Length: 401
Ligand SMILES: Cc1ncc(COP(=O)(O)O)c(C=O)c1O
Image (cartoon, rainbow, N blue to C red):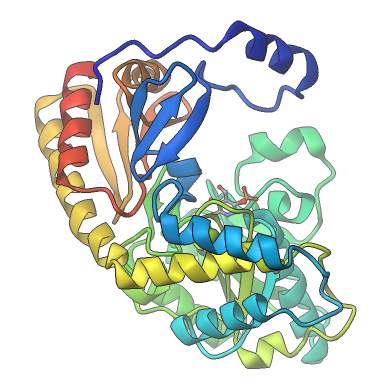
């Protein structure tokens, strides 16, 4: 890896962004043109180690040959026919997801927020079908993130993200995360489901306590409420288990997955146990592109790579090494308040609001890392990250912090 200043964004591209693109993203001044494994290259040919991996989506690394081969072959055969017809990649993927998660059924869509929308619709439809139409309320956590469309945004427990778009959907209640008493107090005869991330990602990387998530399952069973686990960010090996619920020993009734599912191609999935899934009938939900042959072929290749190359085990192993290194760093660096996370979903809580500057300084050194707000640095590398890259990151952080 070069030690270099990151190349400035080529002027003509900055001008186009300024002129033609809606200003929804505050972008870093770099344009990537190529990726391979852990590495990215910018327009000037400079090399970077990527600890963001497309916000957690490139789990098999950039452009894994088996994923690109699957995409190429499928896109030369058949790209789209809609869901009015059968396509083999969708059926194979659904079977594989069910066999690796829990018995039930799958609905395929295009993103994490869509998977969460589907989960909310399915939970409400299920209660109606079960003769409890008064159960409409979804209890979610403060600081949670479930997406940007109106239903998912209503579930998201970050009022500042939702407030400009009010009125949101009615029927959402938010309680503090990792607080069983607060959750129990919010459950009543109107509650439909509890919706949680096993590790809150966008909120700052806060893992659920094991006792909390198991307690949530017990409360849901006691009160006759569905448990929705949003594994959009934690799923596909990120936490060192294919799905985080397996690590916690807490099975949901409905689970959402996206991000890493197809190694960076747009896809989302909603999985539900049979008795819940069967509440959706023809016409209840749908998508033109959802479960299309190309992203499904990429997802099948992703599962193969994760399993055959032992990447989930590597996420646990290398995640532990990175966690240890970050803790060691924290013991020497006063600016670090806390180290949090699970597997390869890790973060440094900083005492000062310097996360943005630190991420910019890292980029200058050829390290792509992510800041959440002003005081959290997040690390979501591809699951093939090894000791060499971990050491390079720790060395870089040592210098920057
Ligand atoms: C837990 C969780 N749910 C939902 C979403 C929304 O996913 P998408 O950006 O694919 O719509 C995200 C995205 O960060 C997420 O982390």
